[in-house]
Length: 220
Image 1 (cartoon, rainbow, N blue to C red):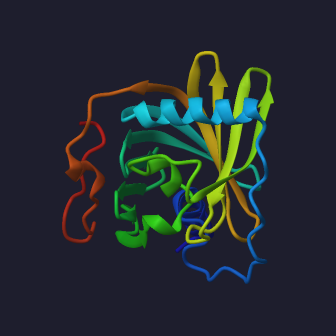
Image 2: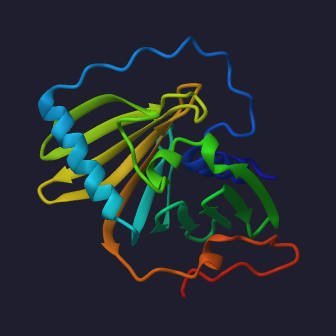
């Protein structure tokens, strides 16, 4: 595997399953949840309602790693549980969550790796019932230039790291997120033009082994 291919795979895993390959270092005991203001609590409730209703959508995405390297592609969302990242050529990467596991396929290397969705911060966003008041700790609500960002993490510590969702405030619309893993590394995803879309067949989010079976075509 070339250095670039290795870096791209690591970057892809960081979006969905940060540091899934390497064991995370010991972390300090979880801090108690901060007290949110009444304004922040109302904002969080509004965001939860929006995300809960965002069932099937698609968008172009731009992914940026901690060193500033970028890759692009198409993001497909089908809540609950399902999402897919189709990276533009020359990358051979496809990442999909089927609601139970996250599968990473490299078409060019003909490799496949599977990780539990529950071990990733993105599971908080793909949950059937998004609850930012139970099992999830909201660490921060911030506003900047018409945008609002909510930083959340799994209160049980099962999903290592944090996810920060960013949305425009008026109208409320998801514009991207960043994932901070247990080692402090950050990967950012910017969505360009998230729109509601017709749902895909569940098989679209199930990636077979590229050595034996063609995987679903993203152009469908």
